[in-house]
Length: 431
Image 1 (cartoon, rainbow, N blue to C red):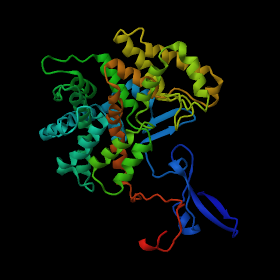
Image 2: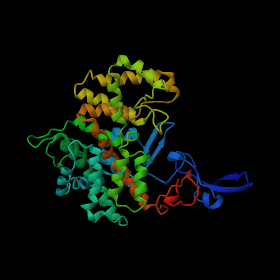
Image 3: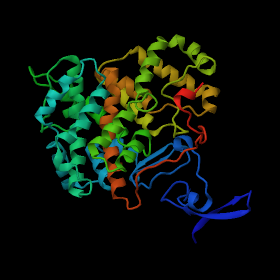
Image 4: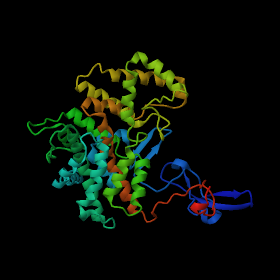
């Protein structure tokens, strides 16, 4: 029996019935598509915290239980037992690949990692101190000027080619943005290297000598990519979908996602964690810092704790904490002051009733910044790495949106609070 919800207009006494839709897991949703037509009212939901804007089969989050699933698979299992290309295949196509499918997918992505040679000159238009995210916005948006054979969004084959190109070329673009900022020559991708290994080679290698990829660091990089691959309908993903709903080409849509991710409230959180740890300076100063966080008049935030969705321990944070120990151990960093502060800060915060009552648990950003810093990435690159990994989720969500027969151009409503209609007064008669 189908479920419905009845809303009563108390002014008129009239009842309105609205269907209730059920997903495979998670809370039911009230179908309000005919709300305005039937009642003359809109809903008001700043930040869309109670609004489902689409149907999706890609990612499921239960924030209260600390659950993150991609196509039904737990993020912990994927991070421990898969590599990023396997997870990318899963997110894009819905199922884990078999051996032959995985081999072919790896090869298809590898063959698209190079950029059109003219794009190299595109970089020279940027200042050397340009933020990598600014560079990536510009370069990714410009890809539509180079790859005209994958712009027809109505053609499934062209959509697939565009998807592969974006996933393949994003590491190359990110590495080039880094190389440009430090004045080193660009490194071309190597077809014999796996995805994460290739990115590290392009980022840290130099032409004058072979670059030997450290397998522990490559595994950590791969795991970071997995943990950031998709995260349901966050701000940047919603932006990609909204941009795509207009029929914009995929390169423009992903560039819009990068721009949104750049915001400090979204992708810049791990960079903010490092700045916070540096501000604390020493673990002896943590009690003083905690006191300031609790004082609402201070305006000090505990970065890397709590999450818009998770009201429990972020499942990605557990994997990231383990990865942090592996990386620092491999690099011989035993007494990193930032790590000492982070460990002590986590211990105190998890025992403090103030933070426990507010369910402020460590999130994925808390340890990722420490890992990336230890690997040699400057803080300005942190969000660029996030964008690199999230491209898989963005492009899968974009494809899903294009293929949804119910999708239409996004057009949120508003609660207008400006002046009502008023007569125009000619300039010479205004006081």
